[in-house]
Every structure is written in C-alpha cells, then in structure tokens.
Amino acid sequence: MLALPGSPAPCSVCGRPRDVHAAVRGPACGNRQCQTAWIQQQKSAEKEAFENTCDRVAKTFGEKVSADAVTARVPYLDRRVIPTPEAEKRAFRATLREALRETARRAGEATPRPLPEDETPATLTLNASCIACRGYCCRQGAGHAFLKPEYLPTVLNRRPADPPAAVYRDYVRRIPAESMENACVYQGEEGCVLPRNMRSWICNDYECNDRLRLKAKLEETPQASALVVAMDGKNVKAAVIAAPDSLDWLEPDAYAAERAQSQ
Image 1 (cartoon, one colour):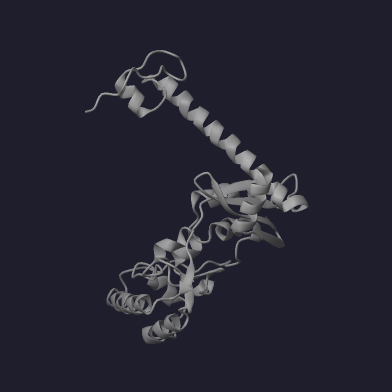
Image 2: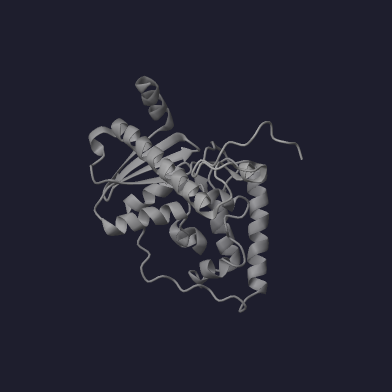
C-alpha cells in the first residue's frame, strides 16, 4: 500500500490526530460518536444545499410556487427519445413470446395478484416525482418491460377471455415508433405508452424512496403544491411545479439560461 504523503489532517469533529486508516474512511476519526456526528453534518449540509437549490428554481417559476409548497429531489433519466430500433423490437417480441409460453407452462403454479378495487391514478402532485425524473426506474424494463412469467399471470387475469396469442398481438401493436434510448420499449417522451391495465403490477405499484418521501409530505398537506427538482449530482436537470389540478414543467435549457443570467 502506498503511504499517504504527510500526516493526516486531524478529526474534523473532535480535532484529535488521526491515523492513516481513519483518514481513508473520511474526515472524522475512528471514534463512533465522531463518525455519527460527521454523517449528521453531511446530511445537514446536503439539506441546506438542496433548500438553496429549490429557492433558485422557485424564482424561475415565479408566483407559481406557493409559500407552502412541499419539495422533493429525484434523479433524472438523461436519455434521448429515438426511433425504436428494429433490432430492439425483434428482441422484445421474442422475449414476450417466450414469457407467455413459460407462463402457460406454469399455469396454476403462480397465483395472480388480486386486482385492486380502486385503480384511480395517483394525484398529479405525487406523479410529478415520476414526471420530473422521466422514468428513471422504468429504464430497468429494457428488453422485457417487466412482462415476465412472475408478473404476467396478473396481466392475463385481467383478460380471461383472450388467448395468449391475442394478448401478444395487442402488446406488439402498442410498441411505439419512438421510445427512450436504452430503456423500456414502451417508455415514451411522456411516460409509459401502455394503459395501466396492460402494465405489469410492479410498474403500477412500485414507488421509489424519493416518491415515498414526497407522498408522506403530501399526506400531511394534501392540497399543497409540490416543487420537484430532478438532479444529476449537484446539477439541476429539470423541475416540475404541480398542484392537484395543474402542472408546469421547467425544461433543462430554460433553467440553465436562468442560472447563467444570475451568475
């Protein structure tokens, strides 16, 4: 192992000297209390930095952002919408055919998830989290759209009168002419092109931690608007301000121009 040049800086919390091993782990010493204090300092600094970012973004939206708006940070899927490659379509069709065959072979083994009594879409303010990130989680459906044997029984349970061949044809005809590059084949510029009743249950039910945090805030103040900022590291890529009945989208270029003028 190469020796670190010079002596390590003292602990950023208690000020005591640190050994080389502690210096590799971070600015705090090996004391558990110092490690915990440093982590809390980092979280406080990140929170303050995000609040400052929200203030700057809110100025761009102007009066559209109310004083009681809740805020949320989400990642950003920075990928282009391109003509869906023919090779990608062929591969997906083959994957879907095999998944339907495997589902038929497993008939009776998997129990379909019960259909929800209320399939009302989430509120616009909550969905702003997914709109701002452009489907960061959905990219994981590349190649299969989560239409796998473990998920398909629930989809087929919605259409008991349709044979698998008819279901297959229905999915194939809905493949869009354009979709996100290297993402789910059904992922378009404005989100999933499939109706909710044709999506895998995981697509309808899954909520990332960022969405869950926003959901908790909105449950406390249901009528509040939401300012959702999509970021790549420390860089703002896009933002959405949403109320229960309206939504405004701040394009990345618009924010970049505003930021340049303020500097």
